[in-house]
Length: 365
Image (cartoon, rainbow, N blue to C red; front, side, top):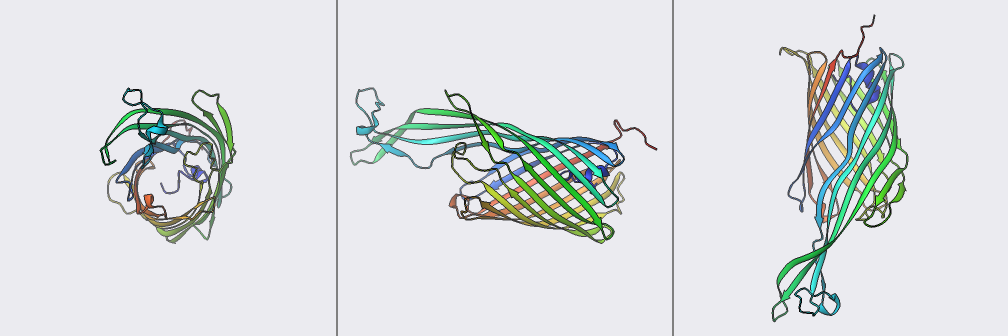
């Protein structure tokens, strides 16, 4: 049902039934240095029901950030036997060694939220959302040591790992989020949309190895957007959107790579068409969508920005009792001055379903 947009609480009131919805995606990314990076995740699960004919309540949970990653330094640092003070063969004499660090990351943040959707007038609707960010992230960095053997010419001929010094930090995140969005109809079915969201400060409780926990607070995010949906015909039209996102502040205390946060601005253009002349039994309509977007990621330390352009295509089926099943494909390319991220291409396939029923809904006159 294209009257209900899962990311827009102001549209929920259009649903007069109890709703269970969920979505999941399959992601693929590659660069000059990364041959393939794949993941699949649930994106969203929600449950909602009408309070009155003009008000709707929704409870939802979604992952915000997820990482399972292993990284290693590309080059070794060498220590000669005169400064290593490490005996690798047990002969009582210090030996030359080399070392490099590896990093393992696992965890992330999720958001649980509740939303209220209200029809104010026939032309105006508003949505309000309150959420809680929570999650745990584990970072393990290991200093790995290797033996070094040389030939008579001083060329390295053999190297064996003989130990490491692991350190593990656990980060527990917590913050509250707030959002408001609205839709205003004008000139028949044309729609102007807006949203604004923010969080309070993100509390990060850091547990270091063999040390007492330390609590840090990082400035929260804020985001806003504007959109226009215009009908050229009853079943065909276009969409224009602008989005701005100012990210959480970056902190060298918890950022092992000491990289700046990435703020984002994006512009989206799309076309939609709804085919209501469907002869298949049980299918009420088929929705087609195609779009193009242009994003700019701006590091908040004023270093060079990153460009991201891509295309989207989606098809959705409205069937049976106002249920819907949607498939969306996204493909894009990011441009960066960093060689390790050169020629970055990504693909994302998303499936979502909205199932409606009359559970817990009393008959109203």
